Image (cartoon, rainbow, N blue to C red; front, side, top):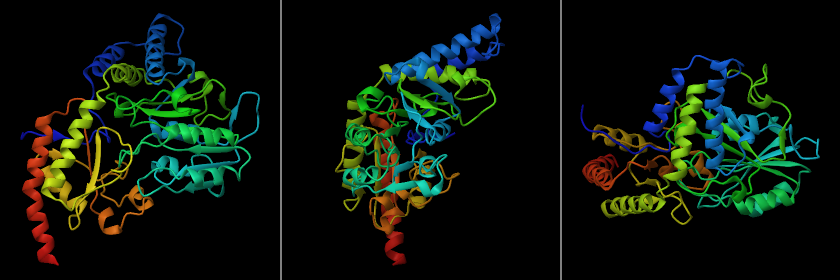
Length: 384
């Protein structure tokens, strides 16, 4: 098989060897983590050790980590009117989400559609704080959901400022933080978040595992999945011990293996090379603070689907943005919310790096870009 180079880490990261080993060890066990015999206690020990590892990654208490099947389920568990704070039994009366959120958040979770409102973002993809202040002032007990960093542009949201605005309005803040671990600070206390969603496969764990982390004084009265007392009554069903073990091991590695400076240098080299080959290229979100590993760009006249196929034929895996459309290349709702013109939206290509990406990989991508762009642009010129 021809050599392949992977640049789609924001969609899913390769499985870490530490996670694989933890999963294999867990699969050797027989017990159900809810059983009281020795085999069950051994499985329970693995689950609780992973809970500590995930909690440590974000500076939370282990008792406040609820394991789920992924971040989508964690988002659905969080986005419910039944959230209350300590000493308060009142439900949330309105949900506000930013226009660039993952589809699972933009769906509104368990809120009725008429109680969900989308908030605008700036041209750089940052939450409009003025609009947020006005919005939460209209609700008595708002729930606000804003992602830590956008999965397409890499733009990092001002979560601390957002938290201050939300809490001043007697609100609760949920943060989808799946793109943060191993790249930027994700400590829940530092961010001021009340609820945080994580996904195992974004940080080198298995697909199909995630978690919702909450602050001590946050209570969710109505679980999303009912029928048993697992996960302290927050999520019924036998725990997926092997997947949770892999999640924990990956979280432990992400906590000690952050290499933002190295990835930033690689990203900057990548962007410089793209713009040297195609000066007309647009780097989205370049005016804002971004994840060190993410570049979203477009070149007028080149469609994303065409570019992605051309890269793939040259042994390079990139994407057009969010990996939530069953393999389809669709126009980005994130770029539309940022006010990007439709022709550029149709051409957006995302390149995302990870812990094993090296300079040779970046040079290989740039060589492929130089190779394919002249052909693609010539075809566009001839078609015009």
